[in-house]
Amino acid sequence: MAELKAKYMGIPLETPIVVAACSISNMIDRIKLAEEAGAGALVIRSLFEEQIQFDAQNMEDALSVGSESFAEAITYYPSIEHGGADEHLMWIEKTRAEVRMPLIASLNAVSLGGWTKYARQLEATGVNGLELNVYAVAADPRRNAADIETELYEIVKAVKAEVSIPLAVKLSPFYTSVANVASELDRIGVPALVLFNRFLQPDIDPTTESLVTEMVLSQPEEMKLPLRWTGLLYGRVDADLAITTGVHSGPDVAKAILAGATAVQVASALIEYGIAYISTMLRQLEGWMDERGYQNLAEFRGKLSHKEVLDPFGFERSQYVDLLRKQK
Image (cartoon, rainbow, N blue to C red):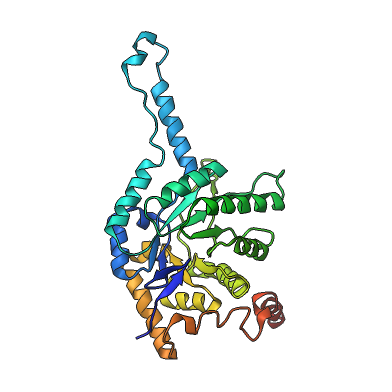
């Protein structure tokens, strides 16, 4: 039987399938099911500094209602402060005590101080690694690409200096030069890059003339973008590469590893087919490997990357030109 062990971010994994941060990863019973089904690791649902600030402000506003009406009664009640990230952190600690597989915390902050503060707190819960969920839309026309990228590097350097657990950076596909950003993060010493952060796009309802936001599950064809960049980056950076978005089957996992991925992150397929579907994906991957005589993942990792493939331009423009010619 094929060996499915991998090492991601320096963390040993029993299998290359990592449950991505999603609704599955914020309930202990579901996390246990993922472990039983064969998940190699799990990314805990993100801690959002913005949400903490929003909740704290709402509580403060609620407590201040009528505070000026009876000044003599204000001191009757003790001072109350928002607990910040305490609930999230305590839940992670409890989860860590319940499962054996590696757990990776996820963090999205809006200030440099927030990134470092919450990174330290998350590390203290006993997680094995930390994924920096850099989810921000560069909508300010006054900020150029260099400013945005510099801010990213400063965040990563600051967090790296504060914690000792390994870091992964979940990248956007919209940087002017994804390869350059990945290379710079690799130079900084980031152990892993996750390709890519899937920005959920708002829609407009013309009937109500309002913005509509909905969670849309990924589709297998969405894997092509991270697959291409994994193939382009493999061998050019030392960081481990993880593909997220569009991984829906065992053959998809095989494709990711052929391109050079160390691991894949899965969410939509598990939401659609159930957490036990992890075991199906692993059986499919094992069957694919057995048919081709592969004993372990390392034997075919990067086999079809830009570095190894016979036609490296297939990852760039040649397939586009070739398809146009065929249409004539």
